[in-house]
Amino acid sequence: MQQGELRQGTEERNQGLLQLLELPGLQEEDRLKIQALLEQLTALQAENTRLRKTIHRLSAGNKPKMSTKLKEALYE
Image 1: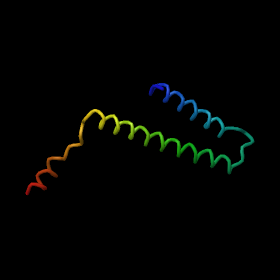
Image 2: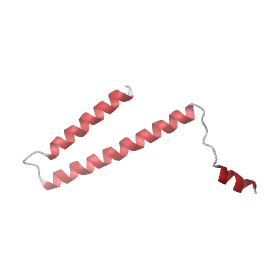
Image 3: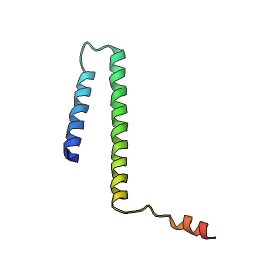
Image 4: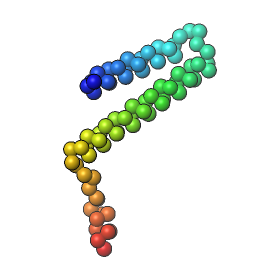
């Protein structure tokens, strides 16, 4: 799956959950559970994006570099 396809599927899922929140007969307890799921989904999506970027950066050979201040402090 391409990233664009993943993003589109995620947006559709988010819209579906938001539509559930608007159902007229929905109990408040269920509404809170759906909101909690949306928040968790958003956090996991952000973490997934960060991990994908890290994996891509590491597989490309770009090693994290020390800041100049840290390097100077270590060499003192």
